[in-house]
Amino acid sequence: MTETVEFDARLADSDVSLTPAARQKMAELFRDVDEGLEAIRVFVAGGGCGGMSYGMTFTDTRTPYDCVMEGDGFNLYVDSVALNYLRGVEIDYVERPTGASFVFNNVFAATGGSGTCGACGAAGGGCA
Image 1: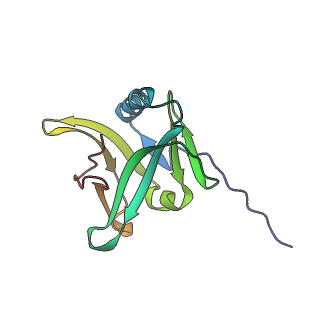
Image 2 (image 1 turned 90 degrees about the vertical axis):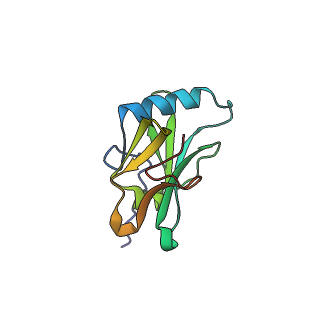
C-alpha cells in the first residue's frame, strides 16, 4: 500500500519569520508595483566559495511548488527547494547610516549561508 503525502503550501512563521519592520516595508513596496504582480518571491542562489545568497524579487507567477505566506497587503512565495535553505530564517528591514536593506538573520551555517544579497553582495541583506 502506497501512502500519499500531501504538499502543504502554507508558509508558517516557524519556516520564515518576518519582523514588523519587514512586513511594513514589504506591504509598502508591494503597493507601488504593477497590478500583474502577485507576490514577493524569496529565493536562494549559488553555493560555491561564497556560500548561499538570499534575495527577494517581485513575481507574477506562482508555481505548484511554492509555499505561500499571506501578509497584510502582500503575499510571500518561497519554493519548496529554497525553503530547505531558509527554514528558521528571520527577515528584517533595517535602516543604517549606510542605507536601508532587508536582512536575513539566523541563516543556517550548516547550509553555507552567507546572509548576503544575491543581487549586490551586501552583507546581511542589501535588497531594498
